[in-house]
Length: 90
Image (tube, rainbow, N blue to C red):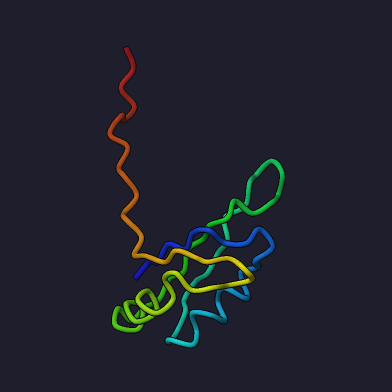
């Protein structure tokens, strides 16, 4: 399950986010989204957990909890919208 984590402290590193979620089970991937121009955190990230039960437990427990001094928002990530523009040229 892909999990969205918002309101991260701008100093939060992927390792601390991973450690938080590993308390609930296996974490396949963990990333904090960085601005490509400044290299600074955008304040949100994603965690992938293969076991849906463990992921749901993490979401329920960690939503509105504190990490690095910030109260974080944790929820199931919505699927990325499909781009239906295609390559049609006029």
